[in-house]
Image (tube, rainbow, N blue to C red; front, side, top):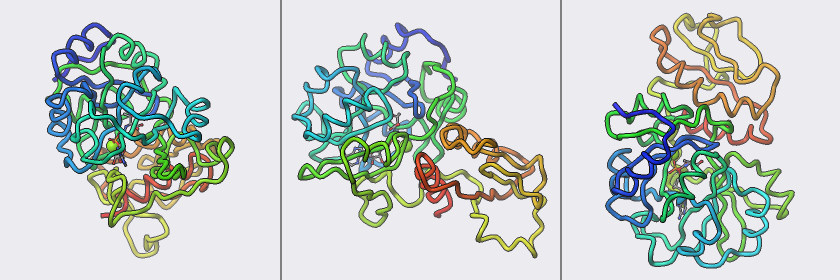
Length: 318
Ligand code: TXA
Ligand code: MG
């Protein structure tokens, strides 16, 4: 099992040896390695069992570091990063040669973000290289939002988990591309579309492409628990025996399910709180031995609700 701790020097030493450390961010935990070291990057893919066609996000703590491996930011990217960095925003930029094709799956762009979590910011400051880090879960499963989640799934494969507590945002970063300077949201996430549009005006949202995904993490089936997930509207509530069904609701219980099989994302209808609770709640239901199926209901389609519904849809797609 991995050691769980808060020692930045230990994390630094492991990363400098070309090995991996799980790191906290405000969105979800990441599985980090030296982005400039192709062997370390290869370990990330292997440890997650992730196909190499799915590129990684590179994490930085400063614009100086960023300019070492990316070309100039488009104007709208400057505007967005001024407002949302550090924070749950990832942007795609033209890469320089120092970033290997393994990081970007052969694409000419590299995904980058400046995370807000204090512990990881301190770690990045201590390092001479940026950190490539996908979410620290086996490929296709729910992303981890606590050190314990990481331990359960990857603890046998890594040495150290930097423990930054519960992730405050709870869903992954919003990914924005700027092909021909035109901003496009490729993945809904911790910064809402409304917030982005307040800064740069109307943007295209293109997060449902599944046949030829531009962001392969946009694959239709993703973030999936092991148990079958059913949207409440698709359930024949009259005929089925619901005693072994779990229910993930937004703000209200549903009396057709056993009370102890239900989790609410936010009784006060707060979408930020709901996002923070989403992945942990799905895990809890997935691990409950008295539950065979998980029924979910969508939340209001606004703010972080869009990212939550997006993850729920992907979790139901098989
Ligand atoms: O919040 C987050 O973004 C977390 C934390 C750890 O930073 N990371 C994360 O990474 O969610 P990951 O690997 O689980 O998701 C990264 C997504 C994938 O869907 C990938 O396809 C997409 O980013 N991506 C990366 N580079 C890309 C590129 N050059 N073009 C298009 N999509 C890209
Ligand atoms: Mg992921």
